[in-house]
Figure 1: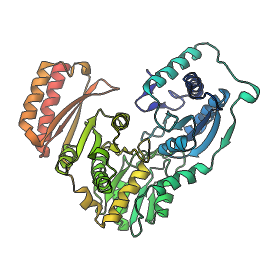
Figure 2: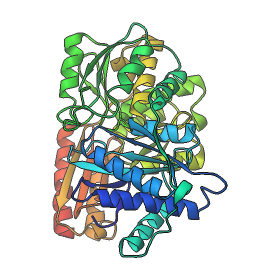
Figure 3: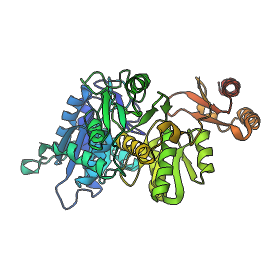
Figure 4: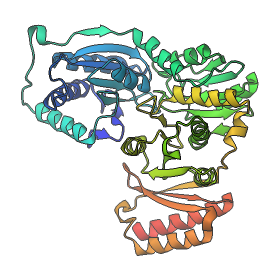
Length: 452
C-alpha cells in the first residue's frame, strides 16, 4: 500500500490491503501515540468507533475495538452511522479519539480507517506519521506495553448515538421543511436511517431510494456518484428536489425538480448567500479548491463575496477554514463544511440546509442554483508521463500561456499532477464546450510530448 495514510485516512481492499491485523495494529499504535502526546493524561481514555454498512466493516470494527481495548481505551461502539456523526459524537461526548471504518464513495470491496482527534477534528499529519512509525516498529517485533486487570479497556454499545446526532442536525436547522417533497438517495450507505429520519422530522415529505444496505450493495449504481436513479425518481414523484449522499454520507449532491444536477459548487453558492443574509458567513468569504468551476468564482465576485482557493481535498479546505476562521467551504464533489456545526463534510446537514433555503425563500432549487452558471469543463488524464516536471517544463509553460491568452477572462487552464498515479490532469474551462475540448486536446498533446 506504500505510505499507509493518504489524504483521508488508510484505505485499500479489505482483507487484502486492509487486514484485521493492520486494523488492530494501527488502533494500538494510535492509542500509544495519543498517550505519549498527553491526550489521555489524568483520566481514563475513551474512543468512539463507527462504521458504514460494508460487510468487511464487521470484522474490521472488531479488530479496531480489540486493539483499542487491549491498549487500555474504553470504547463506545456506535454502529452504522455517517462519518460526520462519528466526528460529532467524538466531540459531543468528550471522547479522546474517534475511529470511522469506511471507504466513502469507493466500491464495496474497499474499506478504510479514519481517526479523529479530541473534538472531532482530523488527526494532524504529524500524528498520523507517528502512528504509522510506531505501528511499523511494533509490527517487526518490538513488544507493546500492555495493561492488565482493571487497566484494560471496556467496550459497550452506545445506541444513543443515532438520536443524539439526529437531534444535533435538527437543532441547527434555520427553519422547517414543511410542504417540501424530497427524494433521498442514501447509496445503501451509512445515512440510510439517519437522513430519512432527520428530513422527516424537519417536516418534509420524504421518498427514499438506495436505503436498504445489505453489506454488499453500498454505492452500487446509486448515491452521489450515480445520479441517474435520483434524477428519474425526482421527476417520477413530482418532488421539489432530490438529495444524494455517498457511502459514508460526508458528501451531498442535489437534483432540481426537472431532474438536473446541482453540484457542490452550486450548493456552496446557494448556502453562501443564505449565510451572508443570516450574518453567519464570516468575512463574507467562501473556501473552495482550485478545481471549482470558474462560474462559481465569477458568481462570488458578482455577489461581492471573497473566494479563497486551496489544493484539492477537503482536508485542505478545512485547514484554511480553521486557520482563518471562515465558516463555509467545500468541493465540487459535494464535500461541504459548515464549520459552526460540523468538523468535517456532512452530507445530511448540507442537504437539510439546502432544503431549508428552498423552503425559506419559496424559490425553486433551479432558481436558487441559477446564481452561478457552470462553464463547460473538460478534464483529460494524460498517463505515463513524468508528472514531477509539470512546473519546470518551458515547453509546457509556453503552451499554457498560449491557451490562457486564447481563453481570456471567460476560461481557465489547470494542470494538476495526480497524487497517486503517473499521470497529469489537464482541466480546461471555457464559455464554449467545443473550445474547451479543443484547448484541452492541444494541451494534452503537449503534456505527452514534453513530459513523456
